[in-house]
Each structure stands twice: as structure tokens, then as C-alpha cells.
Image (cartoon, rainbow, N blue to C red; front, side, top):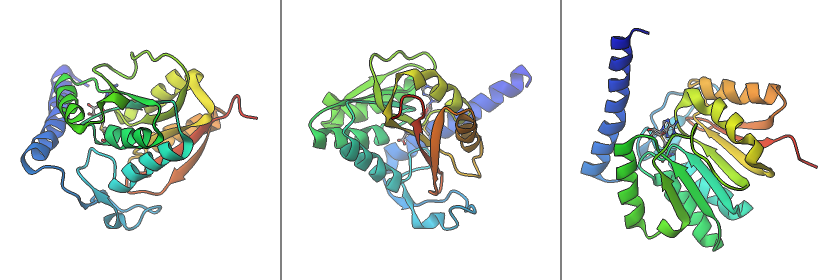
Length: 219
Ligand SMILES: C[S@@+](CC[C@H](N)C(=O)[O-])C[C@H]1O[C@@H](n2cnc3c(N)ncnc32)[C@H](O)[C@@H]1O
């Protein structure tokens, strides 16, 4: 791609994220029917709800909280904070458990600032460590019990490979945006499975959610 095309592409992408943030600022968090396109695995996306097209589906947010209360992770890592909504649902689960923390990273400084303000106003800050850095550079200490991959779609495979040695074999890996129409994350999950690194289940939500587990270390 030429430099000018790349700049144009980057500007467009920035615009979309900033535009959604502006919408959230002006109209607040409003649930609406999901409008991602129907797929063979999810023919009625309108039966799901969403706040906006960046934030995970409302039902996936509920799932995140329930996975946290069900498995009681000590350490959750999330890549891709955006406005912080999924982080807050994870933190709600941690609060209900009375233990654990979530480390979440957002590499865009302006988006990070926005998420920081939301998290500070939420009353859930004590469960959250928000970082302004890239998932491909972020260093985390300790064993990760729940890994939620929700950053830029083309780097999800890299993220999983990078953090895999630190992921608890009895823990869970979640990869969002794994629908067949978004393809790239689905293909990444299937490749990681073919390479013998994870076992994956593809949940048929409008944007798709992989629930996976690391294969090595399981007994
Ligand atoms: C789909 S949104 C995350 C949505 C959020 N998890 C939720 O459901 O509320 C993806 C976010 O990842 C950020 N991002 C993209 N690549 C990243 C990277 N390498 N490291 C950290 N954040 C990244 C983008 O700026 C964007 O805000």
C-alpha cells in the first residue's frame, strides 16, 4: 500500500472510532438492535443488542461477567479497551467474586483518556488496571486465568501466541469478532487449533466469540 493510501486508511479508521466516541458522548450508552450482517451461523443478528458497533454485543458483555463469576479468575487480561464497557462488565464479575483484577490495554492515547474517565467515574477502579500501550508490547506478570482478545482483528493470532505461555491451561481464552463474515479472527482461531495450540468452540453471536483453552498443560 502506498504511503498516501495508508494515511487515508488510517484516518478513516481513526474517524470511525472517534465518531463512535462522539456519539456516545452526545447520546449516552443506548442499547439498540445489533446490525452486523446475518451469517449462516447467526441468521438473526437483530435478536441481539448492542451499545455501538465497537463495544461487544450486550449479551457477550453479560457472558463476560458470568464467565468471571463462574471461573473466579485471579488475573484477567483484555486487549482493546475502547470506551471501557467490556472492562467494566468484567470488573463487575470480579467485584461480585470479591477478588482478582483485570489488566486492559488501549494503544490510542485519546481513546485511552476517554476510557480512563469512564472507569474513574464507575466506582470499579480498584478492580481495573488500565494501560495506554499496545497488546504486542505490554508486559504482564503472573499467570493469566482469562484472556479476552478484542483489539485490532489482524493481530489477534499474534496476541494469543505472545501470551499463550502465560495462560493458565485450566483458564479460558476468548476471541471476539470471530464471525464467518469477519473471517480473519475465525481463521486465526482455527489455525491456532490446527497447530495444536488451543481447543476452540465458536459461539454463534452476531460478531462471533471463540471460547478456547490452551492444550498444553491440561490433564
Ligand atoms: C473492538 S474495540 C474494543 C471493544 C471493547 N473491548 C468493548 O467490548 O467494550 C478495539 C479497540 O482496540 C484498540 N486497539 C487496536 N489495536 C490495539 C493494540 N495492538 N493494543 C491495544 N489496543 C488496540 C482500538 O483502538 C480499539 O479501541
